[in-house]
Image 1 (cartoon, rainbow, N blue to C red):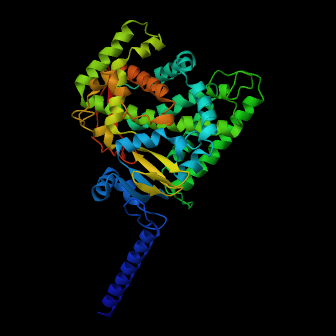
Image 2 (cartoon, helix red, strand yellow):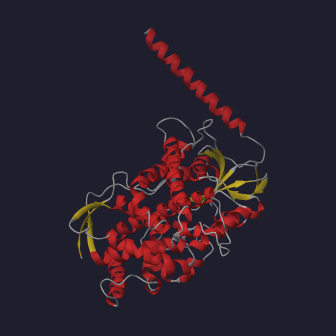
Length: 465
């Protein structure tokens, strides 16, 4: 009996302490003018609920506090905006004190010079350097031939195998980008680079707690290893007089035509950013396209017809060219519909550089604003029957240009690699659907938040078409 009383007493004491800590933390942020909401625990905030519950957490908070509320996620006091009009305003007004506000873990691991973290004149310089690498002319003349050569080899000999398409598309996205960045050295550094890169990706969406065993610690250590790999590569190229027609070669040019000259540190962070952004979107969209096409045979038939038409005009060994890519209208529609329905990107983070008023509330300097764009992808007014996989809705080009099309970001931060990513996914789908048919094995579970992924893999049985 005495032991039971002690246990009950300890339980009551812990409960009282937890309640007191929560109340104290809420009082810290009960400043006049702030939006309604809850802040959770000190340091951790509501990060666990946000990452585990995802869209349900957002819907519950909106039901309680409206479409503009405060929280504390990923180590930062944050205001969440779920209002489409306000989201568009925030994305379009970087010059008015709303700059990129990515979590500290992402800034530490991707680097302070990555294009997503800088703003103002520095962002203009970095964006100019990046756009020069992935302009339509560069895609047509330099990148598309590399993509085609890579995809043709990567997608060979898949018949009569059971493969994990999630793992394969991750490898595909990473290796394809690496070939575009450093063509000559991609094969020799890939095996050393790839496992470190995968650890880096996991660390970018974690609490910035530097303890052994955490994703943050592993991600930051992976960054240090990647810095060595890329630093040695840049040093080796700097000592050589050989010219390279790849992304790294263009970034390292010393001639007068290079209007966006970057330092070695900026070049490294730019390379990491290119790899990271391309990897996330290309791999996940490719995997989910395979999934949706399997589940919708009539869509697959129409897509295959488009690609077979292209192949019929070519010799067996003739590569995909720019005009072929431009003719893939239905493929582009499949990519957009996959991105919309799977919601590859859930939102965008901004940070206030000064105290400012938004939506009738006062937002303190240094707070993050999470522009949550997921819900708009399922708006029945924009997308009739929004839960249906219907690529034909995108055949009307007006949908791609409408004001609330935020699948690839918005404002001055619209994804600069959008067309390059579409070229990679289109080429992957071209060789996949013209060479193979497939069926799912096992019906594995899919998670949609915080990243779209299959925790146990997505296995398919592949056979020749």
